[in-house]
Length: 189
Image 1 (tube, rainbow, N blue to C red):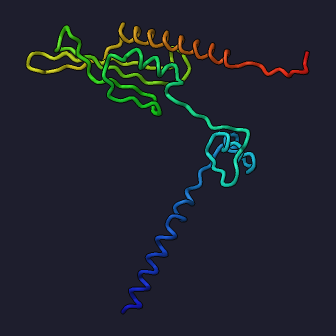
Image 2: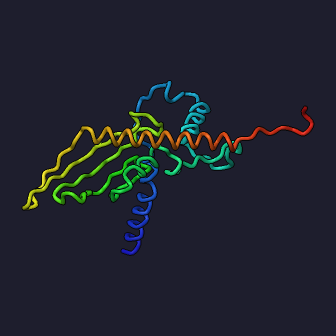
């Protein structure tokens, strides 16, 4: 009786240990040879360049880490500065989206506005971000109607953000030029 239970436990543990290995086999998918070169060294090099590989021993001494912070992105900073009077609901730099909470002005408490900014690129260009403005109108019984507006406010916000981002980029470029000083040797004349 005890040996029967031990055999069941052994079989169960064996199955638990083997399942992850079977799961990693995957299904064969034909791929384009241009995207995935058949030569393993080229494929490894391509994967490492794209950041899809891991290196167990050693690392490339010539390459440093890439640290992208929200404060170094001019569009991100300009967007937050432009809508700084509104309470934020979500600000996800990794996902590239900023969503404000409903904002009610002092004039009319029955009207509110909400802004969503989606970043499509880090470059300062007109097509690098999508702005959506939602308006909420409520009557006295608090029955509210929400509409997505695509008009003057959207284009004004985009223009204001792009102007600030261009200023930030210009300032960053000037600062980088000041920080760079060519090294000259004492012996050269």
